[in-house]
Length: 352
Image (cartoon, rainbow, N blue to C red; front, side):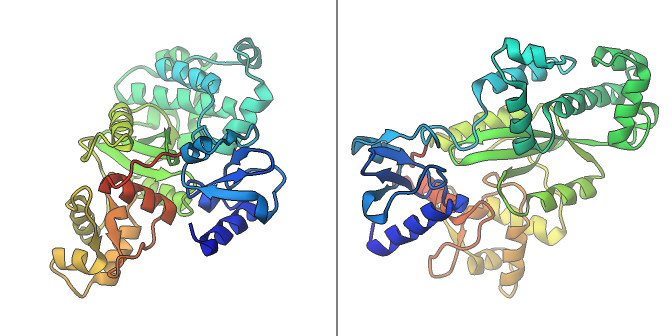
């Protein structure tokens, strides 16, 4: 790395700039510790640090992982104990974990609350309630009786079930058959955590959780499909997770998981064009416009790329500037470079 780039990385380290997560690992010479860019430990002097592309390089140089920022873990990875709870809820949404249940499994209820507020924007108790409502909604849509569904879902009274249901859907369970749900789940990847949304037709959103436009995308999707986005299970999620794992391991070049991405006719045309860019290749916006037979629509094509809600599945990261430079990507340019490096097979990127 040249000096100028090292200086950029050092500035990012001082500012704990999360946009550089995945771009570099810092080794602190005076302590022998390797850290993430966002480590909250006291910052070393410029002459006492060196930068690496991966944790592997830093470890081979003799550095050991920081116990504060834990650079060997996936960014935002769900702790094993919490994942076990989520797996249990997936298997049986009627389960209700109270504070003493969490303590029995070695989980501090206060920590659980903070983790869910940070990663889902709601408390764990609210998450459980919404998950039960989601499951109950689908059973009512399939024709089950409201009373049986309420008690099977773990609610202790019909009134409690009705109030919780109405607070989410705005109508009583009996009047909900015209409502729709988009299921939401959280996925761990080598590049950080992603949110996936799906309905019965397929995956309709896949984005990194730190994307700035994520909240807008949620609102747009809910409006387009006249649906509520709620944490819940979906039959498309297991296949998505499997194929993403294979992709990040360099073992998959195309995706077969069903996708559903509503948009205008022009957007659909552009997104279809994106899916036709072969793995390991790139296109410019000009080439993309030419591919849809409208060479004057370069700016409109770039706009449609930016409106893509299916990161990786619809590979907008394969579009670059006419001069070969990296251009805008909702997940961050460092992720775009990582994905292109993975697909070019020049390197097998290794992060945390």
